Image (cartoon, rainbow, N blue to C red):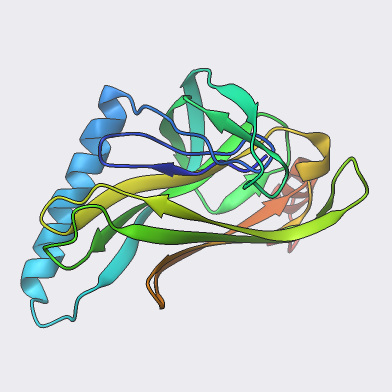
Length: 208
């Protein structure tokens, strides 16, 4: 399944089988996002000459589910389903994703947009290893529009995906992109792997 964004208001979107659910963040998550905003603002102050818009990914990793969401049919999701309403928090900083159902992974991001942009419309693209859906169709990409809330042109949120179905357990690279108008502001890459590969590597192999 694919899951999506968590805005500053702490709503995370991840689809069920195309993970794009809305998630309410925990207090720990709120603190993490607030810290990210502070760091990003400091960086912005140091690079005030940087053109607007711009963005950056500030954290990558596995997330844990503190409160369950619900799966719903979603024609806009690549897999036809999405998960809405889960409460998530970062559990481990990593870009390597073990292929197991129930795993959530994603990244936190920060955007600087024109100050008069109160509700910017973003395009979220997810490119992933090819998966075969129950109806026999194959998908390797999804995209959707996201309407975010900006404060003085600043947007901070979490974009995430949940592996909810067996057919989503595909090995390879997962690339998240956030676009504003015709410009890509953020790109985050993860690599999924079968857990037994880590065991081989840990025993002295030369695996990634």
